[in-house]
Image 1: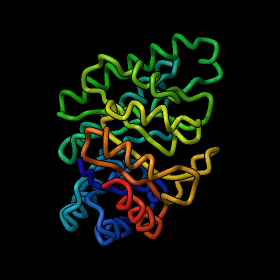
Image 2: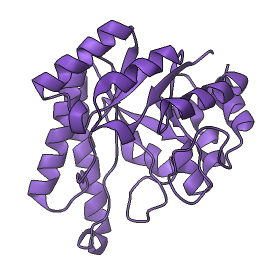
Image 3: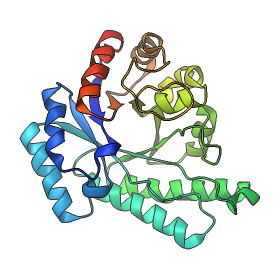
Image 4: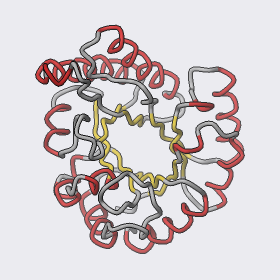
Length: 258
């Protein structure tokens, strides 16, 4: 199945949207909006600017929910509720733009490390609430695997599958760059049929560098062939820091993914 390349850059959430026109000029099919900073969808002025850009370019859209300072696995109830509220609010405002919203899992705080089973259940309950919201708005809310920071949940593909299993409205985003930081690219590729959405970017296997494809240590020939053979979705989001790097990534993508 031929997949469509989208581009996203979380590093540009405080910039004005002129850079987005470069996504279309670089011949990407779509834009994944990092819904934070100047791109928070619940702010009417922000959303109007975003809609104007989409209409001007004709780019298709997916959305990444805000995650800065949020913890949907928190054992502190007001923090947990606010984290879930912000993700649900993003889903509600994204629903007229897309049917895919990616979100980050929570993490074990210093207090949470003393109650890991409670943290797990808090994350599960967050997904149940978010899943109901997603269903109400015709969206799939996709939980993403995380980088090699030990406190985060969902480093392992089976953990990600387990924590989302059976929750209506919840899907999975596989991030191959994140998987490389925990040395589990092969494990995620083995489960690629279960991915609802995909993120790709490169690094050297230790930190989340968000490099252009080919500038790190990931074997993109292997990844591309596995995704082409087993991924059931239509979109692959290339994440990066600039349009220049996006173009370089797109060259690699076209070589191995289609």
